Image (cartoon, rainbow, N blue to C red):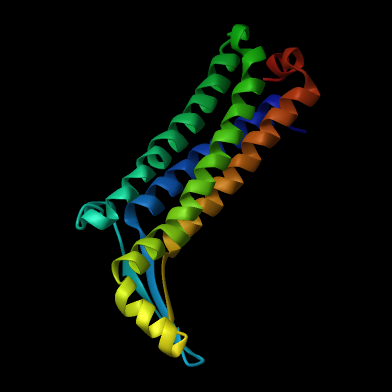
Amino acid sequence: MLSTGHISLILRGILVVFSIIIMALVMAGPGLCYGASALGHSVTQCGGKWPIDDWDTSDEMSGVWGQIMVIILSPVMAIAAAIMSLLIVKGNSKIVRFQMIYMAICAVITLILMSVEFYYGIGFIGDRFNSLSHGVLGQLENRLGASGSVHVRGWIAAAVFLLLSAILFAADALLIFCKGASSLSRGF
């Protein structure tokens, strides 16, 4: 049977892998989809992408650079948690009592990052798209009941991985809380 310390180390390894996946999805921006509907018919076209090197192609889209926080914080938090486990394995018992607080804070920050990423994946581009072509869409919407949408499926997937990461951070904090910090340091 695995000890609590080993389970915690496995969770933190999974968090590092998730953070790499999140970075790749955000930076590659796969699954750019455009959708429109009018008169009861809808059309969606997917298959494009919006990678990081295209983020500055338009002044209207410049706000997407807020995702840099997702790209930076996700791996930094996961790697710091993994390093904390390795230091505890090496006998640094001074940080054992702080890891539950750190993991809980990471869970909250990751939930905030998830919200930001869902906004970018679903709402940000659509809001910009609607404001850029407000005149045309407004006329179509009034006359035909038309609407349009734009989303990036890769960014939505990154948000799902952020949600899973928040759950793992919280599970790790709960594991530490239930087992107690002193027994965790002996469990390695």
